[in-house]
Amino acid sequence: LISNTTPPISNPKVLFCPHTNIKMNRFLLALLSALLIVSTSAFAPSVSSVRVPTQQYSLLDTVSSMYNNWGKKANASHILFKPSQFDEDAAKAKLTEMKAEIGNDPEKFAAAAKEWSGCPSAKDGGSLGEFGPGMMVKNFDDVCFSEEVGVVQGPISTQFGEHLILINSRTGEE
Image (cartoon, rainbow, N blue to C red; front, side, top):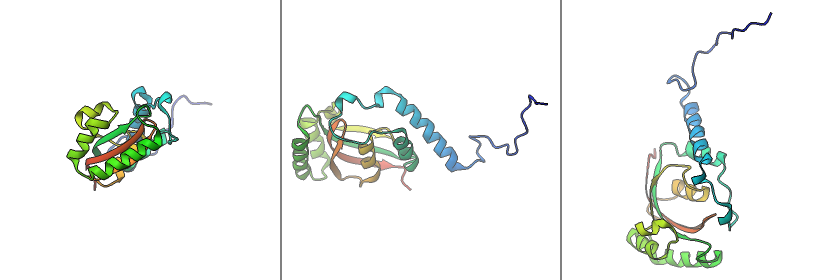
């Protein structure tokens, strides 16, 4: 005979129970969050803007960043040179020159962003505000959650162009 009843569960723990493994809960929450982020078109890279060979920000990259940087937030500013402003080599050369002139001075960085950046954040001195892991494209996210705070990083290549990044602060570090 075939029974229509399900056998009793040998382990009555449920998926998001406070008694289950915390790492598993953290991973599942990161996975669900990443699915939401990746599935929204606002975060998907535009095919028409690709000009440099960069690794696509896959679901695995998003989950990995969210898991490895769990509870962290970054606050960063950037200067973006879009492909329409400069070709790749000229953008890198100009950003390297600007980096030497700016040093690690946040005021000089903001002034340069207002003058040169091709991003709408230029009006705010390049400030992107606070964001969590997995919210930015891979190369940008990697820098913001691994490099030294208060130091200008770059040039960094993404599918949107070439960047200088100033990590203003990072919270949630152990």
